[in-house]
Length: 157
Image (tube, rainbow, N blue to C red):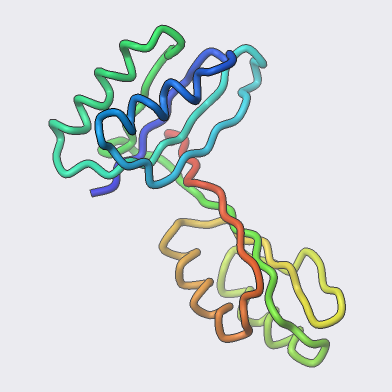
């Protein structure tokens, strides 16, 4: 099962490496990882999606994270009300005559064309991971040329 946790850390050199090392040393797989500075430039916010079979594994992960000196706080969103999103940018084949068709498809999702040059459109979408997956299946019919995604971002509601 995938669990989403956030970790507020001191924004210092090597913190990300120590956290990633903690996961890999114990054989835990990080499914996605997003890191950014907060409003306070001295702290960073990490959203980590981790594969954990049961609660014991998740508790072990949180205990190990709490031992790291640069960790300020940990939030487990597994049983907490929250909002999560993933951002995707995708280049798709799209001739001028197909642009209207593509825009109709995008209206069904939280997505838009942010650039259209020649026969290529760049699509931006931010939504739940399940909806992003559905969108990508539809975009695949147009022909996805390139794709980049963020990890999951989460915030308590």
